[in-house]
Image 1 (spheres, one colour):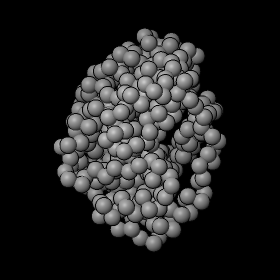
Image 2 (cartoon, helix red, strand yellow; image 1 turned 90 degrees about the horizontal axis):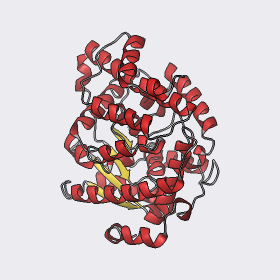
Image 3 (cartoon, one colour; image 1 turned 180 degrees about the horizontal axis):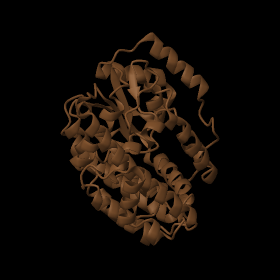
Image 4 (cartoon, rainbow, N blue to C red; image 1 turned 60 degrees about the horizontal axis):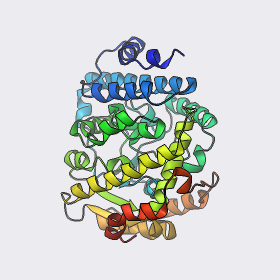
Length: 383
């Protein structure tokens, strides 16, 4: 693998993606600015090791190739643009607040449509089947390989190629997503991102990918999950005004070190110079800004559109929590759904893949400071 200056050069990557696919339409140019800023930040600031350069090069090439294949799919079948996104149910909230648990439970509904990890990694062409697709094997091999270079990842977030995954795998195709901050130290990109996460172009492209995924494989309603939707709430509400939203809440003193640990695990796969205190300072400031940004937007939502759920309630009585969500947002709670949830809970006990251990102090954070800085949040949501 060439050095970062060559492997992460935007013009070279664009050219390589076009040569490999034989296609030229990337679906507009709005992605160019974040793409170029991200690559510059990766080259200049991330301190990537050789493996990190290889991983980032492969990621960028995958995203660019997917964009080309997506436009080819729409060009061949313009009717894809008419695919409905029926009654979407969104789980949002700070990372590490039970969003994954809740998403997995909601995905147990036989009537629901949810995105598999393999679909997020390779959304184009439109899947004809959710159980029999050559991309599944490819993603199973990718997940196994990634877990070898990040062996602690499963304790924080288990990659399940056939399981439900969050929208970041689609939104990262816009090169406008906080997943890149988790994967590498990219402060210049982070500053740009904080000002653009709610850009409506992101959500229009995200909707385009959802239409592609739902062209042949549909349900009565979609179930989505991504903490990224919290800072992007304005764009989400603008493009999906009919969205039903659940926001999860948890003590920030528990959220922050868990998020920092996940970030450390991911960055450690790509760099030999991961600084825990830098990670702590970044996510402390980032989550505080996200709370303030989302709070300003929540008032624009329709009455009852956002239902608040406590993490403590979710883990104590997940079945009752899901019933409450369905009753509030008007979805049908069925016996097969309830049975599937009970089966999933029995098979997925907490710490199934090992305990995820962390402390505030190892990331240079103090409980007193966190509680002071997030006092408005804890007061507003009764934490």
